[in-house]
Length: 128
Length: 395
Image (spheres, rainbow over the protein chains, first blue to last red):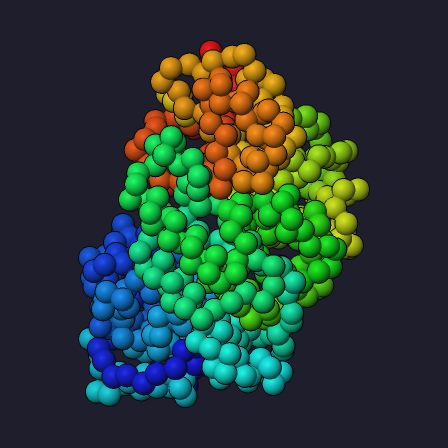
């Protein structure tokens, strides 16, 4: 799948997919990587070490710093794949150096699937 | 890539001006690409938000410290409120731990050459752009004031993107930097007289709630003081998604006048007030100065408090910028306020100070303050005129 590079990097990992937007500030524990927003599709799940696939970001601009905190705590997602990148998430990925790609048809990816994110070229490829 | 960079901008992106500048340029070019900007443009002024340690946390502080290793501002840059008065924090009940961390945040900014004013009203204390000037400001109320009342051009920046503009001296040309995105979309006819400053807060709340992302063109407001426009800017930006408004006969931007018209009545303003008045609010905290109080407002409050005493069990914060506080000290207003048992608090405000759990009910004249008191601090709220707030304090 061809998308657009937001921040560079190339990784292979397991996808964690949701159809709901994510607010990192107040919606994700910066120390554990667990989604804590009440009623969120991923509530209780950890995004640490996963290729996190979701439509877009939402919420406060402080969210960028939460991604940075996750990186420092070694609980950051391996990469981020979005349908439409929101500036808060984009800035978060840049300051935390998390590979990120957007303009991807995320409906074609399922949780647990092994995928490769080649952010340099904006390409996402299912491995199996 | 559509975004074209000058050789100087490319050098920054390639790291030839150091690590922090590179990171800053990465942020700016990424935002430029996301929003389809064709080029970067110089900015002459920056206002950074995300200063209170209560919001930043350890991770935010770590990021700032890293940027401060070799980052230096290229344009006039000022700061949003911190979580405490940087001098008199102790008597306001702020913990040693918090104070230490807050000081580290401010030190990191200062190392980068930021003028560490800590106020949401930079335009009152020396960071005042002129009409048509391109700037990069965070702080939604100041953004709205700068775009609308001054006629400068800025998007609604976040903390890291505003810092990035400060370190590179540029921003991507999209959004409100382009004339075509500043045009009014809905006309609001105000059919009631606005008297007190908090009436302007209610008007901002009504229009903000209704307009969403559509730029308002407001008619029927006969006159407004700077303080009232500051209050309106804060409220409309808190309750709505807009960062610019037009007010006929008052704001300087040129625009076409939209056909779509909505009416704002006295009833609407009353309902807005009722929405901010919680039943059974047990008021133990009174705070005025959201956005930060001007010297004129402080003078008025000082004369209301002169010779009075704040009731036991109540805490009163009048929040302002440090240079304004210094002026208030010189003029004797500070003594009048503090001798009454109220505090004139510089650098901080009731929305970003670590106050959760300290109070039960807030009385204020600010619609914006109510929003954050309820959401972040879980206080009940009541909104009154400044005069009634002071009456409550000394009753």
